[in-house]
Image 1 (cartoon, rainbow, N blue to C red):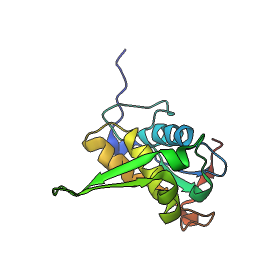
Image 2: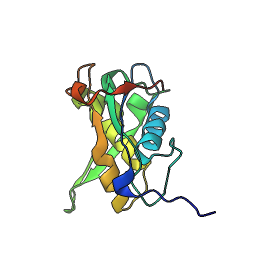
Image 3: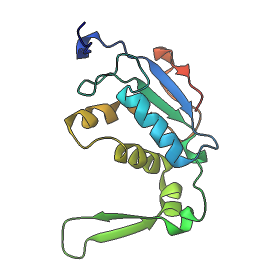
Length: 142
């Protein structure tokens, strides 16, 4: 008996909707990362993009536990001397909650070419409206 290996052209991708209302950031991000990579499917193959397209709605209502809104700090660096910038999680939530969820999911994916392809199938919206009704997405409980 041979081991089954999925091919990229044979993968049947679905569209999945996840509601982030009241969900904890890290637990939601792991669930999204697993669906994007295809680890919830029976035809999962590590070197092939077998995951589904994920739509996340209500990203502004995602929860952070403890004092993370004030204590958790995100750092960016421009590459120039003195270019280190820092923002708290609360500041980033006010600017755009999609960025925090995007960074959390991206950090849970492997750092390779495949993950750069996988992350393009993630769509995050801060409210309940999204323009993907024509794809007929199905709701998944988190």
